[in-house]
Length: 97
Image (tube, rainbow, N blue to C red):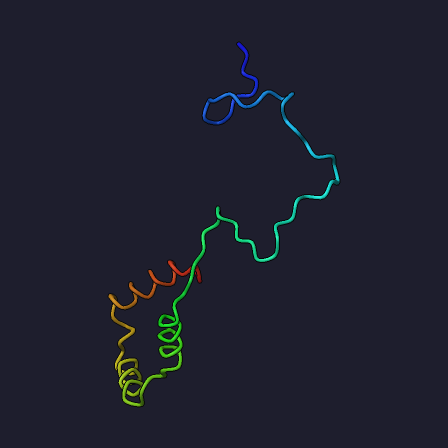
């Protein structure tokens, strides 16, 4: 059985005699400045999304929200088994633990 030149999909590859190989140390072709490779994914974030992210990052808790959170903690809000379960799961998912 001859299995030379079989790729991962089972198709035969080109004959080795037809391959062209650059000499060791030869310069590789360089893409022109500003050229975009079409086989890569790109992400573009809209101006609206940037503004929304900036606004939410700059919005601290109001004094009322902070007081409510402090009271919840003082009242033992973290001691509830359901809360501890959620916190533990989120820590595990984040990779912090």
